[in-house]
Amino acid sequence: MRILAIDTAAQTASAAVIDGGSVMAECSINHKKTHSQKLMVIIERMMSDLELDISDIDLFAAAEGPGSFTGLRIGIATVKALAHSVNKPVIGVSTLEGLAYNMPYTNGIIVPIMDARNNQVFNAAYEWSDGVLQEITAPNVCTIDECVARTRGKNAVFTGDGVNIHADKIKESEIAPVNARLNRASSIAAAALVKAENGGAVRYTELVPKYLRLSQAERELKKRNALNTEGERK
Image 1 (cartoon, rainbow, N blue to C red):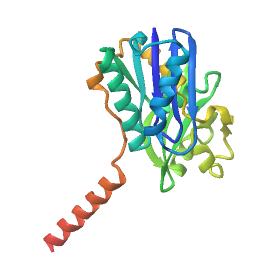
Image 2 (image 1 turned 90 degrees about the vertical axis):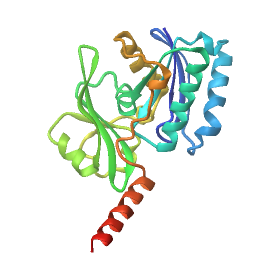
Image 3 (image 1 turned 180 degrees about the vertical axis):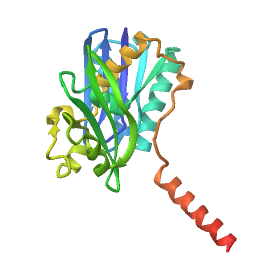
Image 4 (image 1 turned 45 degrees about the horizontal axis):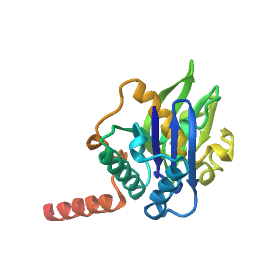
């Protein structure tokens, strides 16, 4: 099965094509968050170098969240448009699960953390069991202190873009090497392959972002509405 996968959930813009057990190509750019300008250029160049047409892809996959609101919308919209153009199925993969796939030989608990600002992180926990990645803690958002407290006393390794930001809070834990901390489309593709083999593919119209929380603008609007309601009661 030939899969084209995209991850634009964080600053890194990444695209990859895998064919069964082989990574045919992968391109990642970790420089500013300009996915709308870079993503299609990356995909077109990659497909050209592979001498493939979009119709040669059997399945499209995207990081579905959590992550940047704008980044997720760009990645998912791109995957949906490509899948629609050739009437092929899609699969959404948790951004955090994709990060866990960066750590295939870890015996302990894998804890991906992504910066959610205001001292918070998007996080989850996974472990490998008989070659299959198992979810221990579902994707959630909490403070970095709460996240670290959950793993205290456990054999945990942290990965993701939150590692550099919160290095002082996780210094007593194992930290993934620098090459395993960035979002990688090949990891999204690997997870998508497993899901596809278990009947997880859906029609492109069913793929939606999973944000875990409201955007800042929505949170501020909700706060203002609450204050206005309270004022009217008084």
